[in-house]
Length: 325
Ligand code: PEP
Ligand code: MG
Image (cartoon, rainbow, N blue to C red):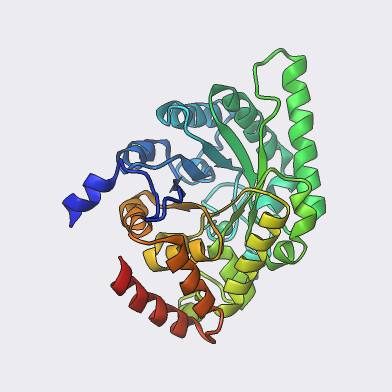
């Protein structure tokens, strides 16, 4: 089986009715790009840059950021690279001086909120992203965006930083595409407003499930309640896909849900054409994509709309996957 998966690695992620799916990889470190390419990734759909902080005692400098991004971009040889700005806080706090005890860390000062309140942290990263973007097909993405005000603040800061680079004559990319993670229900509910102000969306099913179901994704005592296949989560995903289609905003799914082959097929049936998965999941997700037609996926999605629990959804999916892939 491993051999057959490896043989498929350089074939396109295409359904049996010839619909090309963009199958990308989620990475945390530059050295992972080798395994992404080996497994035939179309690009990097999510580069979790906070790991630059978590792997060192020292806060990374603008140069540290730049070097890490430049390495990923050059390794990927012209393929798209989506750099997500710092998603620090909650489960990804590390030991640095920014660490702060909070009662409800997942509802606290994390992610884009933390970046917007610590410009000495955020600005060097944005400078590095803008500079590195001159080296290839780079896009930037903001995590955990909840209100349009946050998005505007982040974009404004990006513009200010770009002006600084311009004035100092430092090369950078002036038309850097800007996207946001869709991982908070408030953003889904008002998504058409965001569509007017971003170049792309990426659904983070890990956080979207956590915030929709009110279940801390790191709390073992409620782990059984944490289900990305829950019908409520699926409805929010479908609503996001519908807004993206209506507003012609490119959309991908980069949460763990897409790394499960059966759930990936469900996402295709719901209208998703771009997935990003951990490198280890690339072969199995590609195999699943190459074994079905979009029509079959749509039938699955239609049927699943009517189910009432995550358990029913997953049982149905496992059953169908056994038939199809
Ligand atoms: C997500 O929330 O689905 C996601 C991809 O981001 P992270 O897991 O890094 O929070
Ligand atoms: Mg997230």
